[in-house]
Every structure is written in structure tokens, then in C-alpha cells.
Length: 213
Image (cartoon, rainbow, N blue to C red; front, top):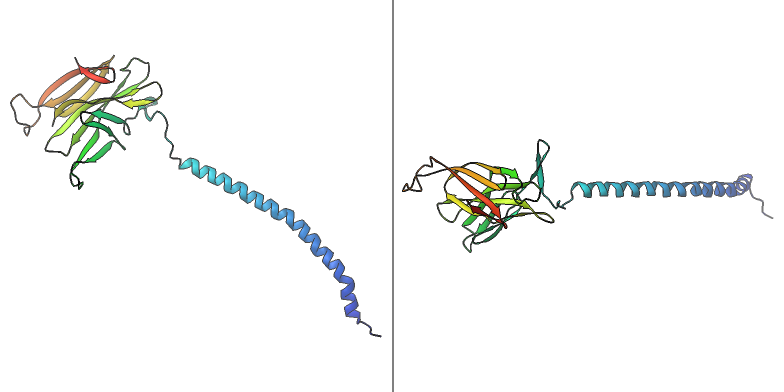
């Protein structure tokens, strides 16, 4: 007959209790692990939502800026119609290749002269602006255009030619009449001469385009 030592008997008696304690600890840890995982998932989802909202690429239906709290429709990404087709601005400019190799480009730029008012009689603020086009030759061609409200959103108008190598001074709106003031050359002077003659012209906005009065 073999007798177990006191140490072995003690180990055998303690082992069930030890197993019970381990299993009890595991049972307590499992809910804790689940809770930690749930918290981590919630935090991750919240962070993802915040980041996606901060870097959202969606655009508002009516691009606008404010000046002293007043609503100002922003035409810097609008599309305007010229004699040779439409031009869409991106941050106030557009480049279109003139030659197949792209060495020469025609650039359209939004100038820093604006006027604000309701030119299409729908009780909404519109923006009247000047655009310059150059690159196809030595000229710098200035156009008058508008960014006007529509049934759904704002849109660019047809652009009307004002002059070549003129120096715009101001734009103003009175009712539906737009006044453009600029410096030009005298009749018979070369285009290379300095523009020193003050000129004022008036236009009315009708059916999506300007007509000179």
C-alpha cells in the first residue's frame, strides 16, 4: 500500500479550491473585458464621427460669406457663360489650355470689385462682379457678370465684355441698374497707352444677362 505524503494530500485538498478561485476570477474578468471593449468601440465611433464631420467635403447649396453679419453670395466657385463657352472657377480662378501641349493657357480671374443687391427682383441678395481673361495674347479682357439667386440655388450669369486693359474703379447697384466705373484710353490712343480717362457705364440685368442702357 502506498501512502501519499502530507504535502501531496494538502495540494490535492487545495487544488479544487484553487480552481474555483481561478474560475471565479475569470468569471469576474469577462464582464470587465466586455465593458472595456464596449467603451473602446463607443469612443472610436464618436471620434470617427467627429473627424468625418470636421473634414466633410459636402458643399452648401448657396455658397456665401458674411461681411459685418450681412449675407454675401460668394461667386468664387461659380460657372459663368462667355462667348466661347462656360468657365467654372475654383477659388476665384480657372485655367484652360490653349495649345494641345498645354504650354499656353487662358486664365480667367475673379477681380476684387463687387456690388451686392437684388438685381432679379426675387427679394434675395445677388452679387455683381468683374472677371478678367488673359493668356491668348497681349490683352486683358474685363467682363461684367453676376452671381444670382434662383429657385433652388445661386448660379453664374452670362458675362458681358467691358473693355481691354482697362482699370476698374467701382461697381454699384441701384434697383436693377448696375453702374461700372473704370479708367480707359481716349479714342485713337494705342492699347499700350496708359488708361487715364474715367468712364461710367450702366447695365440692366434681364433674363440671365446684362444689357447696356
